[in-house]
Image (cartoon, rainbow, N blue to C red; front, side):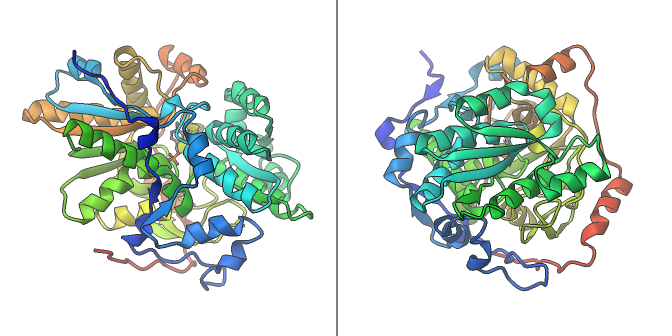
Length: 458
Ligand SMILES: *Cc1c(COP(=O)(O)O)cnc(C)c1O
């Protein structure tokens, strides 16, 4: 019998996260006046224990026992050998994926939602606000808040709110409260609606609303929580790659190619960063973050200082950005519709430690259908972008006759995204690609901002 899944026992779960800030240099986040942000500047928005993690340069950070206890509801996640896909493609490549769709909300996002809810609870916070694109993050945080007994308020990007009504039902089942963004509840929301009453919304605007709602609470018991982009989120997600490394060790294999789809960068970073550590230490690995051609942050946008949200409430972050006013086309992969990219992911790309790729919506769905019909799991629309790259690399391995080992993150299942599959199967989906003109126009916005330095870490 050839094994399909490689399991770790519950007590083999990693006890520490890997912090890439021990191994790479980052430009500091800046205030609008160009001076570095200090930890206390962030205190109205995040609890101090998470701010300390955000700026830590310790390589290994202990995972609290109470966090591990909740993660063990579904972790360790299986490493799966995609034998049926290999057979369908006739490739000599060995293809593996970390199945992050097995969590209760159905994606990798609770890997950080759980520790974030925990650290807020320990700090005395009673309520979290957040944004959500496709609804995955909002449901992950609602789930995590229920585990630790705190309240959760979610601003959900309008286009997804309409496309995916059951995501709201999930959030409310876990006790969260979800409204469509832009909403009339915040100044940022009212401004966006005044400019364009029919706007599909954007992650940038929803982030502004959630930050505003957290800071406006006069009791001081509300904070904001972000599902991607920030250093501490990438840190929490490294449990994916750390588990994968142990699993590869068990079977005596090791990846040549590491792939993840990239919206804000967290599922990609979660799998890839522990391997980036090895790459920095001399191991040859190809590392590919994959994004949609409709929101080509890493492949087309420049490396600049820009705000993480539309209203400019966040610090200026050093990242690849299409401009914080950019409203991406209404792609079905809602989790990949973000104008920026994690500073850590942007930095490893700037240093050549990872090579970004982009794929069209139709190529992504085509790969998604192939994977659904071979491996069985219906992938989230975001995940299909990674899949298109995997299929591409597997075909290349066949042409070259090379036995490569490929690993990717299966970031989530698509069982609440079936409307998108309906549209694809009935031929109603199309591709969006941005013209150079549109990209240049949206970038106008940060022309006068400070410029990040091109740092070399190794
Ligand atoms: C949110 C999400 C993404 C994109 O976010 P990252 O921070 O880039 O990982 C990808 N896949 C799924 C299933 C998601 O829910």
